[in-house]
Length: 352
Ligand SMILES: [Zn+2]
Image (cartoon, rainbow, N blue to C red; front, side, top):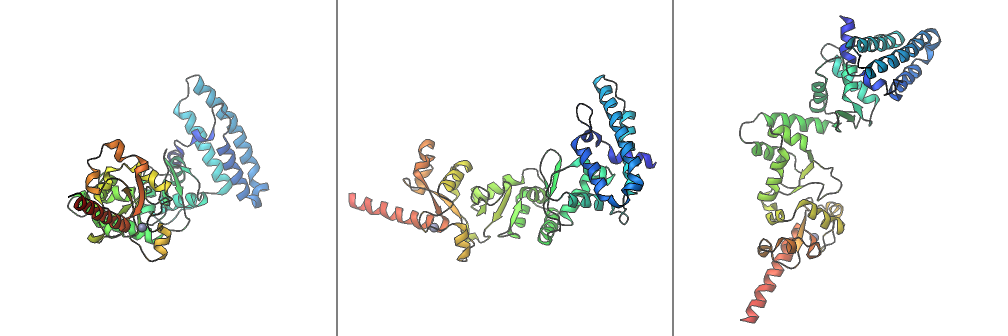
């Protein structure tokens, strides 16, 4: 039974320990190196048989690799090396510590992530240290219930970004969990979550979670483009990561220009970047606006030639010509537009 548990724990882990030529990979050497340094005190007494056993195992891995090449590698051959590695670990370091019942696997996952703080950790390592099949659910719990900043960085790999849990983040996830259970539409739940997080960064992952749909971030774009919610993304604020959003104000008076939807995000991004994320009228960027206490500072693209009611009628090439576009803050965009309208009316009167 114990043997089976070891196999479950290490299943899928062995491929990381041997390279294509059957040599122990750098990861395996790293593991062995770590084992050694942790056990310096008792090393002379116990480590020699273990290191010899691992050297033998390296030979066995080579043989296994040859068998793979020959198309003759049964599962039992893998089980054998996996169990031998686990046994070596236990001989050298004793049995893995067990946390209180129910928390064990989660605790081991957390400990392993903390040991590798800031570094990518393949999911199969978490499977190995936890010894359970539902390890991915425990990772989610650590993130959602306990507030650990664990990023899923693609390819089944995880990274813990801070050793201690972030309590604000934990509360944010708890709220997400509460809103997620509410009846009504996906957009309604996203609205509720954003309104509860004004000025705070929320992630695509959280939005998908509260909305109970995979495309939660699409609803966010709708709120922005069709209803004018001032929701900043990495396009407007370079310090936001892609997939992160910030609602600047829940006040209906702060709804912004919905014609902004006519400018594609990548174009808006290029205009803002060219202009240094600074309003061409007041010269402020977000940092300065915040320093002045203006938390509702929001960048918009302004068309220098066409009035806002004409923008929609312009041919796309003309509307999207970056030379015709300039960055303004929302407040100055309103002022600038009003001035242009007045100028236009005055010219009309003159020509009459
Ligand atoms: Zn301005």
